[in-house]
Image (cartoon, one colour):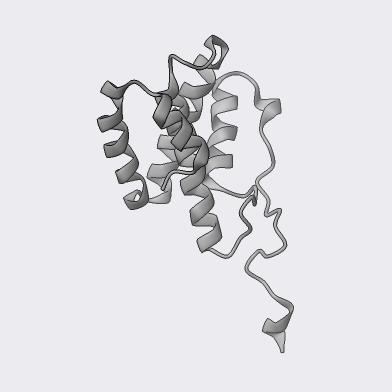
Length: 125
């Protein structure tokens, strides 16, 4: 439901945090794209902020970042894009998080990078 990365991070999270993480995860599919974007910025920022401390202490933050990436990918695929198309809610949120962190040069262009950007050659025939 949240992807393999999030599943590993969930298992590593403290048991006391797991009920809140499940509740948080269950709310993702019902969020609008704008709401998911806001949650994604916070999740990416949180995960990146604690990454220098290593894993083992903050799996809940890493879980949230992985889960929003997975939800974003599902939405892009449902819209007809490839699994790793970089034009996604997650990528836009990543760009905002790196800007907030003072690294705007790390932001990536938001363009469709998949072979199918909702257009096919057969549509004109």
